[in-house]
Amino acid sequence: HAHIRSEQPIHYFETALAQKSKDKLQFAARLRRAVKRHEFEMHFQPITNYPDQQLIGLEALIRWPQDDGTLISPSTFIPLCEESGLIVPLGQWVLNQAAKASLQLREAGFENLPIGVNISPAELRSDLVANLRAIRRAYSLPHDAIHIELTESSLIDHREKVIGIMKQLRSDGTAVALDDFGTGFSSLSYLRDLPIDMLKIDQAFIRNVDWDARSSTICDAIIALGKSLKVSVIAEGIERSAQYRWLYQHGCDGAQGFYLGKPETLASFLARWGSAKAGTP
Ligand code: C2E
Ligand code: MG
Ligand code: MG
Ligand code: MG
Image 1: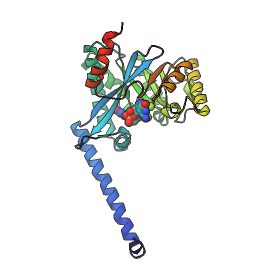
Image 2: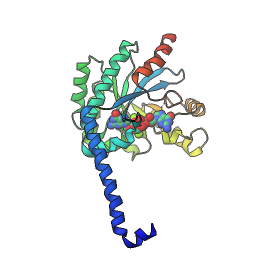
Image 3: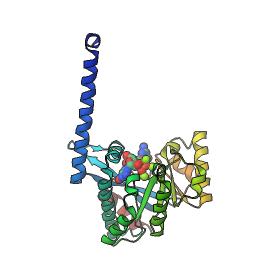
Image 4: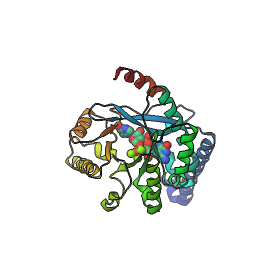
């Protein structure tokens, strides 16, 4: 090894680098093909209310299935899709899948279970309002069947335009959630005027909320903020009953996390929750 480094350091380095960028190119090409062929899978994760743990919605989360049976996480490929523009056709597919799922939920008896869809900034600016209207019409869905989740990164550029789009969405009956709240660059002055219905506390603050003073202070502050802005506050990433209880005792409106249910295909969601629903009044 030392020998290689002293004699051909540059060559060695370049080979590794070339290999790496070749991998990257191959990955990008595979991704592009997968987007064209719609080789993805949507999973759905339950969101429940307090105090009775009733289902109040689902979040749609995309996965990329591989030949070996594994699933690639969206945090690996969504950023690449955002860089390359693939996010626009992919997002279109996601919205259609969410609409189909909403129909299936209705058929299974879940009448008012909105599906939250994550929207990247580029999708938001490429005719999302008209897009959603067309999809709702095509599937005969009510206005509130699909919610959208935006992160603060959507508001970094073109803020006025984005706020205009959010207002149009809401006047169409589409609820808007601010996702991963607390991790972005929120300034309280812009939050005051932001047309949103929901704040989702990032899981980073939920992780230790039941024992870490800093996390609990931040969650308390976000919950208070939500109350004064009259938007509901949902906690993400709840994995343990102590976190779940802490958030209830501190006035959080809704809960999401492995403790309540993992993201799963609609078929397995229906198998698990369909019967639970039959037992509830
Ligand atoms: P997000 O919107 O904040 O979604 C929540 C993430 O937390 C999901 O990760 C979910 O699987 C995970 N999660 C939920 N409960 C728990 C828990 O109790 N513990 C832990 N450790 N994690 C939990 P996922 O599915 O890997 O998605 C990552 C991100 O990718 C999402 O974050 C969202 O920003 C983005 N994303 C997912 N699907 C889509 C999509 O269809 N379109 C776009 N544009 N972005 C998407
Ligand atoms: Mg989300
Ligand atoms: Mg989130
Ligand atoms: Mg996130």
